[in-house]
Structure formats: C-alpha cells, structure tokens
Length: 79
Image (cartoon, rainbow, N blue to C red; front, side, top):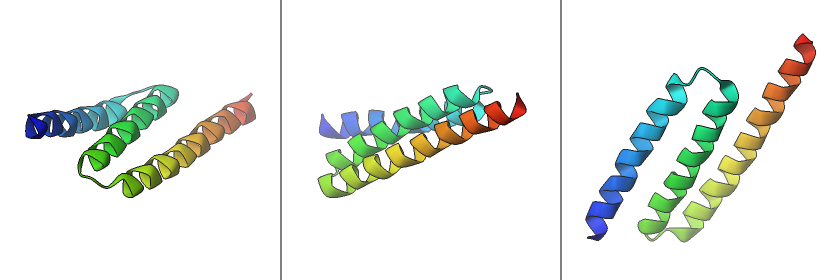
C-alpha cells in the first residue's frame, strides 16, 4: 500500500511540473510550483527524511516568495 501511495505522489509531481511549465499566467505557474514543492516535501517525508523535507519546504517557500515579489515589481514598473 505504501508503495502505491508513493507512486501516486511521484506521478502527481510529474503532472504538476508539466502544468507549471505550460501555464501562461505567471502567478498561476508560481502557485502550481508551490503545490509541487509541497508534494516534493511529502515525498521526502515518506522516504523517512523529515529534516530534508523541512529544509526543502523552507527553501521552496522563500523561492516562491521571491518569485511573487519579482512578478509584482515587474508589473509595477510597466505601469
């Protein structure tokens, strides 16, 4: 049962990565990237690496925050 759930998580990661790359809206793409980060942290936790999972989630959160800040700054500069 555990292997089947892990395979579903891996397939979900691939699907979210493809959706995030193909998204036309930048904010939507960043939201999908945040979901991918969350699923990645879940996969790491399932592999019994909670310290690595926590680090991945923190770094992913910082990166997503920087992406959102950069997108808003670029939109403000355009007028």
